[in-house]
Amino acid sequence: MATKTRAKVEPKRFITLVNDVLTIRMVYTPTREETDVYTLTRQLSGTGFVLMKTDGVVYRTTSDTCTCPGFVHHGRCKHRDGMAALIARGQL
Image (cartoon, rainbow, N blue to C red; front, side, top):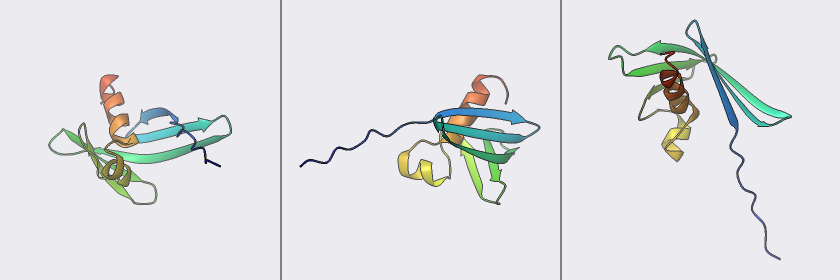
């Protein structure tokens, strides 16, 4: 009997930035969601950002890359995508 593999469900992502506090909410199903909160600091060069989670974990991101494990493994991540969305909306 062959095993069926389920298609990976990409979450709907919502990003907000208020007073340098970045919130990324990922909704997988109506009953499953995750929320991450970061303090955002613009790097001196002006092209990148430092995101610090409330537990002290730090990621550095630009429009092209991020230091998080997700980006290293998959070549894309919620941090980089979130920064791009905020820039496109004129919020950064």
